[in-house]
Image (cartoon, rainbow, N blue to C red; front, side):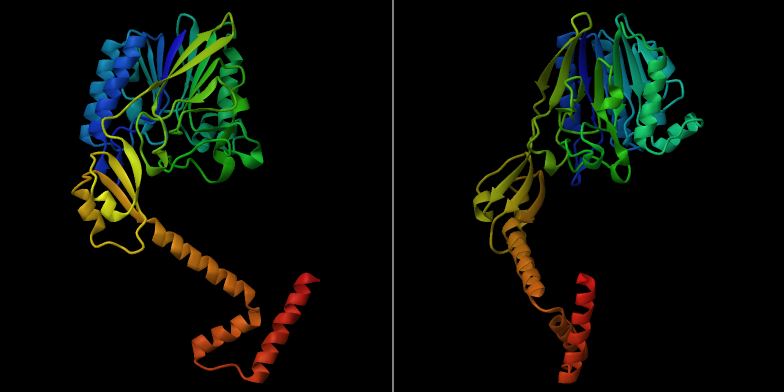
Length: 384
């Protein structure tokens, strides 16, 4: 069985006041052409179809046009779940009607987990939801975290699944192969991924999905597997932040064979007409170049340049941001030197300096001796 796995389209994304909607339309058109040529048995999109819960009319029009083309050009079922950026009700709108066109869209969690039954596989769809919502669906269960919620949902699936068939699940969130105390340390993250909750309660151990033939994940924008070749993030089709400039974007082709218990994974590249990258160097040197790419500038000049960004934008119209890395490093060095200087100064002398700065007077010899005795006495108690 051949599956095409994609996720995190974030249609309508704006980065540093630059709308990426034209880039998204072009790259997803390329994705669709490549996908149609592969003739897959199933296409899965694991969440964050939209970038915002209230997308613009232009964004909705692009999504509608894209879904229509997908239905016409892909001769296979298409499964889409909502992510944490989506409005679940919007993603699930007219789902019953669209399922008649082999387009299955699940936006809101339900106690009856949606299953799409294919000739040789069952596809289970878990749209993003917070654990309190899942708790309301299963009031008899003890659910205190996203991990608890996901365990309950997966347990319900396994009550009635057929292990002789291929079992595939779509999930949007953080899945980790790390231990509890190091949850998420094994994952490559980016700045454009919105946190799901506070602390490590947002992480789900990959062991929760034991037994599934393939786990199609969404949320992380870099393609990666999570402790198993069968548990994967496809990554996003475009770069969405400075932290993603070194990503190689694309989508996954997954070939599953139940009888032989094998999986083959192939990554297909998606190359945009305008790349997103970092350029570092001297201001005058950078002014000699030009590009339509999305550029994050890192200037190595020792001094700030007059109207640097405005001047660079004449050569780089899609400039994203500008940093003076040499000045930042010098500032950090000064802070470190100052911190070391303070740490080397006895605390009673620091107090004397503080007193003088705020009163304009120096401590008398008696006051200085009293302050020193108090601090030394407290330090002895702390080390006792």
